Image 1 (cartoon, rainbow, N blue to C red):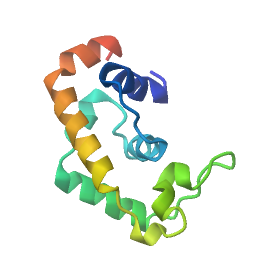
Image 2 (image 1 turned 180 degrees about the vertical axis):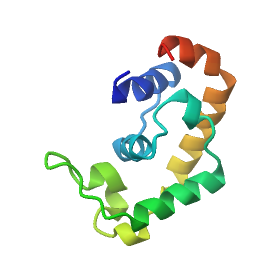
Image 3 (image 1 turned 30 degrees about the vertical axis):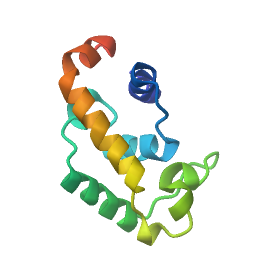
Image 4 (image 1 turned 30 degrees about the horizontal axis):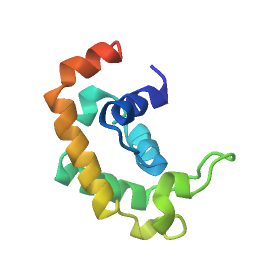
Length: 110
């Protein structure tokens, strides 16, 4: 499965846009599949934010910092957090993926 297949499936199914920085962070952290994604909780989001604040990560040469830390924290990584709307988006999608995990597994050949 390609990195983008999971996100494309979610975006197409629910008619939404998932910010690229959210997609990239979830990929780095291993949450870019229905099995692990559905286990995200508010506490897990805080853990992910803490990890992103503490890692010494350089985006690929052809990428922008905004693509990995969002527009608000691209130059202030030590203060990184998801925006409130993106937290709600992630947790809302977690609920949908849990609800329809059998469908996503079938669609994504998981």
